[in-house]
Length: 277
Length: 296
Image (cartoon, rainbow over all chains, first blue to last red; front, side, top):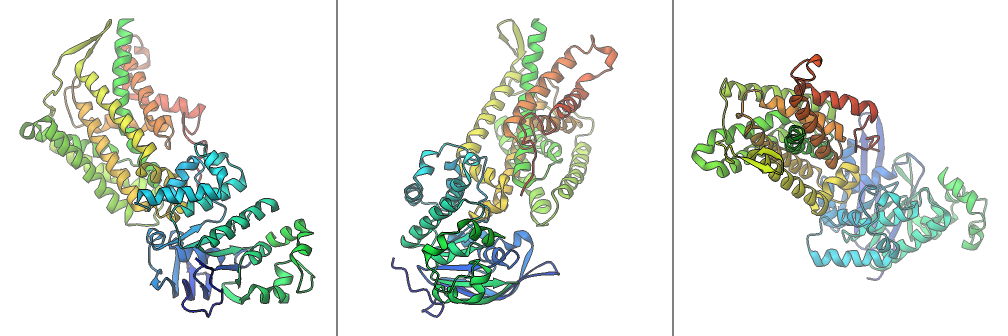
């Protein structure tokens, strides 16, 4: 599948979130009217600090927000023309949307194989399951070597790969990634980014939520900046890189707007500190 | 020495019956975080139905019906108590199960009254000679079936999708939900399995050498609770190990009660709790439990 040009106006998007308002209890308004779109075959990034509503957004899409007692007050989530609001998490997975949770959340006491099995649990077709597994092992050969090992014994980077592989077992059309770079060494972040790119080239659309703007803007073609539950900024990645706000808040830079990838790579430590701070 | 051996064999057999009940505790705890104190009355319900129907249906038919009834009863408790209040605190739910236990067991003991309901002695009153040891055939039958069920349970827990889904939910229910694992279904099956296992255990507790099901059989079943705690509430292997440990200790205490009369009598009835106390002082999360059962 060819990646479609990522512009929010291009045709009817694969995922459309419109005017979404979500609150926890009476006091906490996590999302205040968020509208965004992911085109079929695209990678779209959502940037924002802690508490901006990024995780709530993903939880609402995946149908798990109810588990944390969040209430959808207004707005809707539509995937491939089908309304996802009100669909339970199992139904969302079957529809083709799978979330990789923040902090990996692999099943540490299960083996690598069992983790993958859990990921493909809604896939009833045996041959489809085998195909998904082969694809995961192709993307992450390391997981194939450790398939009998308890997942809790894997390193952080390996656990992130397992978390992504586990999600791929459901053969999603859209992958939701919640901060895949969290707590990983820069070199590993680079590897994860490469794999996300490869997954996308194989035809899976990606909604990437990140504090690591560097990584997100390198992968995505279109991005949104979320602040206090609202989209404060959106645009193509080229546009966003040039804005002061993104420069200042997320790229940690006094860099001129046209800072090249090479220049940015020179100060990984500072960049990560700022990105995660 | 022969006496000792016979006591141990009887204890192991009793222990596997406790193990079946304790497995029910553990599987419900893993799937829903609820400690189900109604396990004893679920046992009584299933066993009562077996005792009442074995005359008409034959032993096998009655067991099938009883297992179905025990499972159905558990399912009703799950549906009414555990499923509906979606965000209820597991501790509140555990206390609710105590209420269910009181209501259900009061009604069943009222029905049983002073009777001792027999199961028609499916294994007869014969004894088997195991080398120097002579043990009731019924105990050996109970042990063989219990071991078979335990093996079956472990195989299912390890290899089936249900097992993977349950273990994944036990570890991180939100991440499991993200995989499309339906927690409601995991919980439902856990209660069904627990109800069915409890019924089988109830039948074994009522067959020879015990005279039959009486109005305090559900209290015997309570010994399975210390068994689950001794093994570690979240460990299936621990449930069986704890059951066997408590069964053997109880059998020995009963057998040597005369020599230990300075401790009082009957010792067997309190031994399970004594074992639990000692084990918990030494290992607070049980022999095989996760050191700290915390979900993040």
